[in-house]
Image (cartoon, rainbow, N blue to C red; front, top):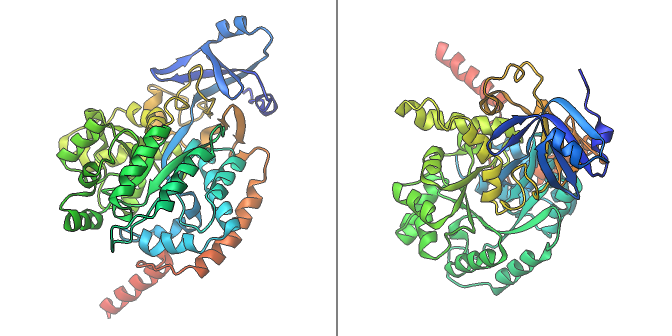
Length: 472
């Protein structure tokens, strides 16, 4: 078996990369190649043709490998990585009891380390872009930007614009001033793309919800808001406004192509129509629904209705293939079994929403998400000469059902090799993990985290004690 040449792939370029096959928007094709230069795909086509038109380039040949777009995580909280396992077994709306106090305990070093740790996990799992929904840590958001840059991942970076405490309708002008500065701050940055964020609709005044929508639309950016995620939030909105959260956002003029609605799990038929009619995008987060949600977003219905959406992890686990599998699996359990739908998106839906659809949802459809000339060279080299994928009959389906991050040989972002067999290039991943473990213990100990569910070991002991008492 020919082993890929890491040194050749790490060359600053230009590169002529000749894999076994390339995943195009139409599907996989054999015998094609790409030219990467200055961070972008400059040519994509038949390998023989590119070799003739680029005679000075030595081809880097990768038999047995698929070159495919990197995954796009449309919903993440990078500075929450220290507490990922604190969510296990917990009921919904844990942000009030876990995430807010945990992020409040972070200082500059721990916020940076937490964000870089999350970026490392994402890159290992084949994500080349993550959308961060904003940090509540009392640090400059540029700390998160620095972590993303240093890790080598593309980041849609949210700035939280909350300005309501639920007591009055006053407006803090500094919130919108900061929003405008944030949108201008990263102009020309090759990896960081600014975004605005509101935690939940009730966390901002009507004025700010409307104004952030306008500012983002003018800047070509997105506003990230958790919408219709939990039953409690829907009911609070009905009591306060007489409208469900998505309906309320529509009333105040916040819906539109600039809105990225995170979760959107509890939707009425009317709300699906609002999403489709306004061009609003959704982050479908299937693992988050399973771990701490009340429902599964009707993603197959969204696809049928033309709703723009991508797939997000919500910081649960950073494996793009397992996320695509969860996206299909959740639809099958929540909707397909009841209706006899044995396809539930036919595989390609979830692969596409994990790449091109995700890029569109986070406002980067013109930048990344596909392998085509002019797009950023954000891509994966996936070893398909494995027991899971070698005997292929339908590669897109098999990538969704049988792919995993262990099969990712290389991850490229902006044309640069960032990850090789799960190890970062140019920086020490194990040292980061070691430091993160130290800082995480201190942060969790300092935070006023309230958990409802005991650890699995404690739960087992309690279960054994109860069963023993019953037997007596």
